[in-house]
Image 1 (spheres, one colour):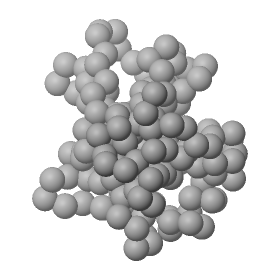
Image 2: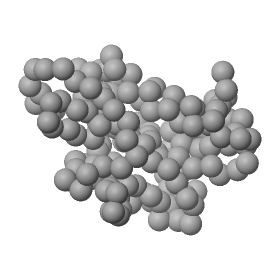
Image 3: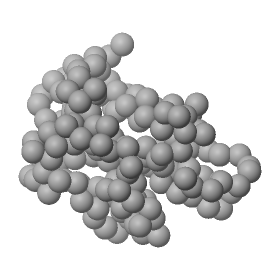
Image 4: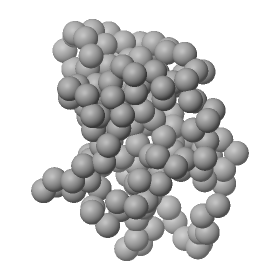
Length: 159
């Protein structure tokens, strides 16, 4: 469990992270203690797209997959005063003309169900952010979530 001081919390969505967050991002993505709950979805995503990897460029840290697929990443970052930490991420791709697939979706333990900040509904907010992207993208009719109850689940891009 992560220790927290009191004070207001703000969660923002960003497309890259500062280099200083590399270890926290690595821990969130690869060493999340709840990943066993969605292991079949993780394995399906890796089989289909390749394993995720953290990369660094001039804009900061991003996550991509080792395969040839172009992906987009959206991070949830908790801001408290001058400090911040990554608390979630969603990795997705447009893998057909009509579909965006969410291949990896993760939130920090304290923002997950049963955590002290579960009322922030961070997992849902990350999926909703991808649905907003889908609504603004010509031709997209559905968003597939590979981790949904250990089997892929399609949700409408427009509602």
